[in-house]
Amino acid sequence: MESALESRLDQLVRRHGALGDALAEAGLSGADFAKLSKEYSELSPIVEGIEALRRAQDDMRAATELAASGDDADLKELAEEEIQELRERLPQLESRIKTALLPKDEDDERNAILEVRAGTGGEEAALFAAELFRMYQRYAALHGWRFELLDLSETGIGGFKEAAASITGRNVFARLKFESGVHRVQRVPETEASGRIHTSAATVAVLPEAEEVDVKIDDKDLRIDVFRASGPGGQSVNTTDSAVRITHLPSGLVVIQQDEKSQHKNKARAMKVLRARLYEMERQARDAVRAADRKSQVGSGDRSERIRTYNFPQGRVTDHRINLTLYKIDKVLAGEALDELVDALTAADRAERLAAVA
Image (cartoon, rainbow, N blue to C red; front, side, top):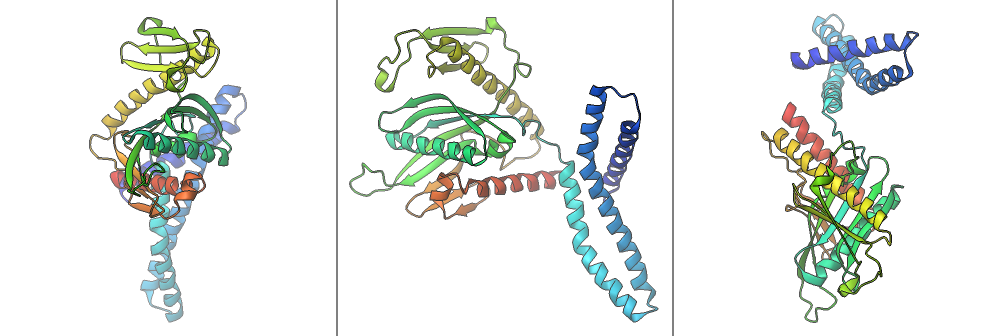
């Protein structure tokens, strides 16, 4: 293991010991105790890994010396067996520590705003967008997350032009952040008499939910318009001006909310979505700076990137970023097998980041 990493591990062990001593002292305020306790608990599994690695390194040195002594054939054989076992274990222990030391995505524990929009393909694209939206709704239910509809624009025959939801729960953004991008579907539409396969697309965006403290929005930067809510085909579905359109003048972002009958509720929801979109813009700018020296194939979050294809005739789902194909399209769309894709994408991202710091 390189000396710079060894030095970093020494620092962590010392810091963990100092925190333990500080927590044992009397007179800490509640806030200080909570802060130090949080850091101590976060460091504990890393230090345990470091101690396991160093025990294995000590064992390797001892076994190597014993094997080299050559005094006892049986002991030498046992030592060589231990060396072989340790040669397999040491890289695993090192990798585990390096993974634990990777910078954490500060947004992983946040809730998320999910946005799904129909892309190329007309009505078929809208039907596919509706299926994707329901897939995430089922996936949220399987994880015990709260799925709250924010906005829905229907086509009238079951399709969604666009739909948005707030998803609340543990590690929501961490599990869904790799879903952003273009999802493509290949199948024979029900309206296709000739049986020809059509290709359509929908765009998914997963945004970390932002609090007011995360994004400062000045009232002077907003233009707020109110109007009557409309349903499929544009007909009015409300007799009052309850729908809200908020335009953020500096960025040009526009958010429309009309699902609630209350103008106040629609405005609150629109501001929630606007904060998330502005926060995502800041996040992407930060990521672009961090990733200037490497092209991330997994976590770019580029909404124009085709990330996945759902091929109904072959019953397969292929994620193009990691070349993974699952022949269980029904289970994926039911939300049941989506974890297989999410886990593989998370592992690939971790491996990519490890390679970048190796």
